[in-house]
Image (cartoon, rainbow, N blue to C red):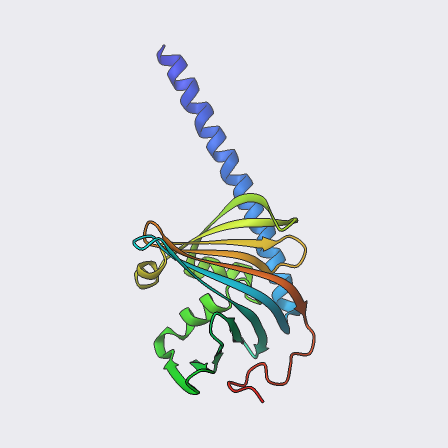
Length: 219
């Protein structure tokens, strides 16, 4: 019996080791894809749907519109033209977040300051960042392949290393398009049951963006 237990334990250890090697190999494959995408990344335009869910009131706050990303030296500028349910424009450039309300015609500004890297990592996560840089801020695990809107995608689970970030998001799940290296679906877990789901479609990569993409007010 003792030998049987030892044999089972040894087999389990070998299986775990093999899984670890397989996962690491898969992670390297995804990292390489993201690195290649980052190297050629200039601009991206994509439609989005954000779904913020709060369990305590069992309520979904859904916003949709168009997002723009552009390479700015070592950083990535981000703009979101939120069209529904209320028109707003969000622009993140130079370490500053600005939000313009078309209803009130007012601008609200936030200085990222010491949190600039965190703002950039979340706003631009899966859009232009190097794959190997993910491991600097997150414990990353590969969870296999899944299909998102008919397209094969790598599924990654990211656990923040920073306690401050972990206080906001306990887990982040990314689905990376196998062909484009872009994030097509994201889930930010807030606590046990609250989450934000972000879905991206209709990608236009490395094309000229609209002239007002990063302007707060419409012409």
